[in-house]
Amino acid sequence: MKKTGITLLMTLILLTGCYGNNDDTSESSKETPTDVKQEINVSLAGELSTLDSAQYTDVNSSDMIGQVTEGLYRLDENGDPELALASEEPEISEDGLTYTFKLRDTKYSDGSQVKAEDFVYAFQTVVDPKTASSSSNRMDIFENGRSIREGDKEVSELGAKAVDDQTLEIQLEDPQPFLPQILTGTPFMPKSKAFAEDKDKTYGTNTDNFLGNGPFVIEGWNGNNLSFKLKKNDNYWDAENVKLETIDVQVVKEIATGTSLFTDEQLDYTVLADTYAQEYQDSDQAYFVPKALVGYISPNHKKEVTGNVNLRRAIIQAIDKDNFTKNILADGSTPLNGFVAKDFAKNPETDKDFREESGDLMPYDVKAAQASFEKAKQELGKDEITLELLSADTALAKKTIEFLQGQLEQNLPGLTINLKSVPLQNRLDLQTQSDYDLVFGTWTPDYADPIDFLNFYDSKSGLNSSGYSNEDYDQGLQEARTTLANDNQARWDQLIDMEHLLIEEDTAVLPFYQGSVAYLKSDRLEGLQVFPFGRTVSYRLAYVTE
Image 1 (spheres, helix red, strand yellow):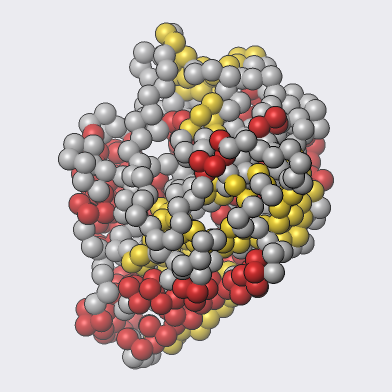
Image 2 (spheres, rainbow, N blue to C red):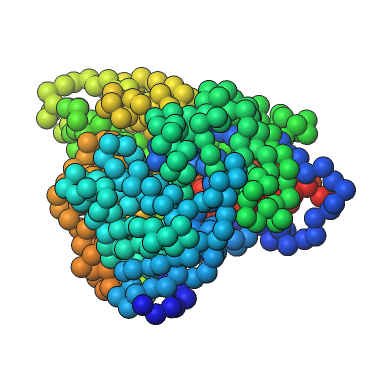
């Protein structure tokens, strides 16, 4: 092998031009006061479901896992990958498929050593069909990853091995130009093999059953409570550059409650949405950061009614997306006619944005929606249709499905939408059990490639609980990953074709907006990292100035 630096071939659009204030990650370079109590109070928009990197399915849990664990790479103050547990750039084979990483001498919060076998164990746990991880498809980058999760090969055949305690070798299925960015993702965090095997199925279910190696340790979370703490991890390898000593976290599902607590100076950070985003639009403490997040309705393809393509077409074209983003969210979010976010990736040959090239797919069109609804009723032999729309019980989710209910019942006479809001974990359980008609959710990729969106609806994806399956779609994505991997233009064109198949032809998922992170931040809090994709927020570089 020859030693070479990693060239990150990422085309990530700098998300600028947003209204309000930009996020202040550059502030982390300022000198930190030594006479200020480094303690902050922050909110979380929903409860934690797990701290297990193989079991999470929601942003809140992913964000928290990112505070308490760290992988081979982390994101710097500009949101770019930098070495973390990897002590130096890896050795890369001539064919670009084998990477050999040397690990730093680092420890978990209990003082035990982080070993190469912990990475291998973590990756194998995610890909193992017995785990039923929603992130299992993320291991497809490794040799034999897809074959293992589909049950055709043994977990031990995954392309990852511990050469010794401090040397990790990974074998890729195909070249991965975005590998450093990919490896910052939550499923790629190490997991103490000894600790996790001892805890077995209880791993990650509460503070006592979790062990991390990140900038902070979590205290006081019993698996159900809505408040807990993050404490600085003195065993973190880069602890000298972590300034915050304590972060008091409380789950605040209602935006009104969060803004009230912020106004009363009981919170230093909280999210904004709907009318509260409008109210604080001109505030110096309000920040609006565009994000590569898609809000969508997922229909249950296993049921007769929602399995009807004309019904799905009627639903998506009956939603006034512009009205929703302007008057309900009002946080910088924008309408989205497709499943790949705009200002996210550019054509490697023409520098044109993916969303612009792919075009507007299934836009708001009441006449077209009503025509499709009539076809659906005829095909189903029904004059009236009643469906249940499921969501989490956060304030934003409730407002969203109330808006959707009004739009669909108004624009599609004969359709009745019943609403069901439950705690996030219950919503996820109902999806896994296929016990729903329609469900509202959001999806954010981990790296700047359209395929990270489109992989969501691969029939073998752990995230695809909808029952959607199309061999042409699966095959098209597989070709983009393999035979077309080194032909930039052909691969790009293939991904556009796959999005058209997913949205226009099959209308398998119903996307309707691209999100934005809107939040309030106290003047005393500096260095907060808010990311345009992947996890939302990091406190590693944050500090208090007063």
